[in-house]
Structures are given as C-alpha cells and as structure tokens.
Length: 182
Image (cartoon, rainbow, N blue to C red):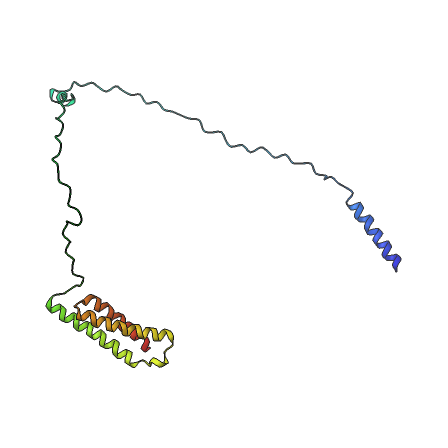
C-alpha cells in the first residue's frame, strides 16, 4: 500500500510540473486606439460695422455746464479752538445717584401682586406640610430645605417691597414643593 501512495505522489508531481511548463501566454496584446479629446470648435468673431455718431454742437447752456468752474481760493485756516479746563479729579466729582434696586408697581397693582405672591407662598407651604421629611432621601431633603429657604427669602423680599424678587422666589418654592409632593 505504501508503494501505491508513492506512485500516486510521483504521478501528481510530474502532472503538476508539466501543467506549469508553459511560462508565456499565447495571446498577443491588443492595441487600443489612443483616446484624444476632440479639437476645440473654430472661433468665429463677427465684426459689426460701427457708424460714427453725428457731432452736435452743444448749446450755450450745455457748454456752460460742461466747462469746469473756476477755482475758488482755499478757505482760510481755522483758528485754534478755545482752551477748556480739564475735568475735575475723581475725588472732586459728586457721586452719581444710585437707582432704586426694586421695581415698584402702582398702588393698585402692588396689592394685586402681593396677593399673587402670598398665594404662591401659601401653596408652597401647604405642599411642604404634606411631605414626610423623614422618608426623603438626601436629594429630597436638600430640595425641601431649599424650598423652605426660598419661602423665607420671599417673605423678607415682600417686607422690603422688592416684589419682583419675591415673585421669583415664591414661584421657585412652589415649583420645588409641588415636585416633592409627587
């Protein structure tokens, strides 16, 4: 059996050697035509005969407008500006008046605005009373304390008649309290 294997290997080696014996290809290379771009089209330039324009003599008014005006003499140089005293030093200047930092609506609007702010604050307090502080996690307790602080700051802003600031604080407190109730 060993001899058959040996004979088979020898036959396969001879067959593979004969199959690879040709080293060059039979076909001759095909010549391809050279690809060139087409030539540009011829340029055709038409000449248009130009007739000279008739010359018309300008009227006296036109000639007066076309002639440049005579040069006028240059205006005299400007005199030096009057001397101005330098501004006083910063320490001598009066201090500017400080504007009021609170926005104050009219008397009837102030009462309505205060009532609106107080309603927000009451709603926030009511919502905070419904919350079980002991059951809150650390973030919830922080929000609870922040809402309480906003309520206190809004009360102080109302006492100082800073209605815009009090309104913002009351709105924030009411929003945080409503989130905690859920």
